[in-house]
Image (cartoon, rainbow, N blue to C red; front, side, top):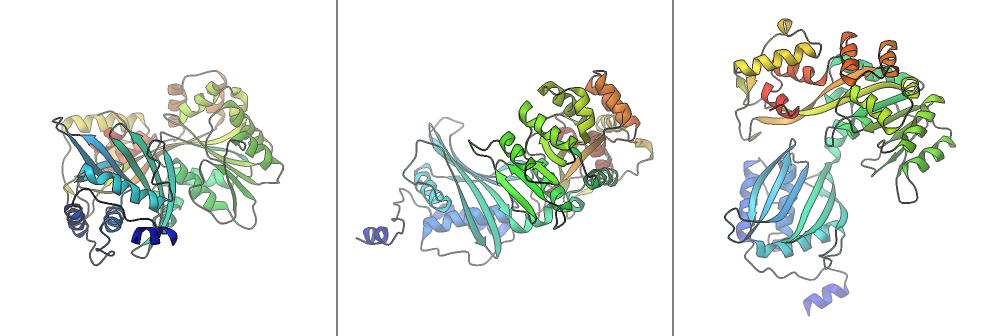
Length: 442
């Protein structure tokens, strides 16, 4: 009767638990205490809701970007297990095993939090929840995916506090020379600024920080995104839909008297051509592209179908970047790298435009402490900025390979992101091994 009355009132019915959830709650509370989060966090008598809230709070306490909850077969093949994992500084960390009998109820509660249909278990669902956790505003983007063992949950954690701190070019961590080139390109009245790199390297963060740098009452700034991640002041933001594609949005923008246009991503020739048209007709255009490095991004534009002459005239700055983990300032210690690591670092630095011999060497290594767990805390950017100089433009028109364009850019002062990483390792901000792992060279 109580469940019926709750349903009539618009409340969710009580979900029956098929196993004791107490041990999971105990593990989560212990993990939270170890992460330095203490005090009462909810209403323990509502055990299911409390457990899900603890999962979210632990994600915040661990500085995680994503929460992953999914069923897996045990390594010995003897039954299934639920795994709760958190992505911290780009690395996925297992934090708790969950009795698989609890997973349907926990998944149902997560769906309620996300505003999804708890009874739909065979189709993907996407939801969102805005929560205040310990005085911090969180925006959770939650996805549910069916699998042969049950549903998998992924929750992206966006903290308003962390977003505000991150959306500043000064705080992202660019080297002074790269930051100066970015700011110079942003001050230009027209041109195309392209941020390149793989997924998860901070391209969108750069776009938002760049737009935030210049947006104000004196400029009309318009953006089209998939999806809109954050709302920015003084920016007209739109998300793409089936009938409102990137090309359709750019055409509409060009009839709306914009000064600056932000395009979430260049995915096809039509989008690229319209973006170039905007840049060549007096608009500043900011966008992203999947490419391995800055020189490769220029060649990628040609591969998509653009005339090299138009690429040369439209593009003003190509930025390529990666994210590397920062050593924890509380526990890292001085340590000499291995001879092989030093040899690799010197070669990469020298080829990338850094005078390795003149660099001060303050090498450190990760240790691990209660503040960081594995010796790293947070990430910073390693980047390269390629300006469209006459020499780079000439090589592009001649069809030179990306490697030759990169060498020319290095000769004109560009530091490759690989060399930037080794420069930061020498300064003790990260390690040579971490840079090599990020570059997929180890």
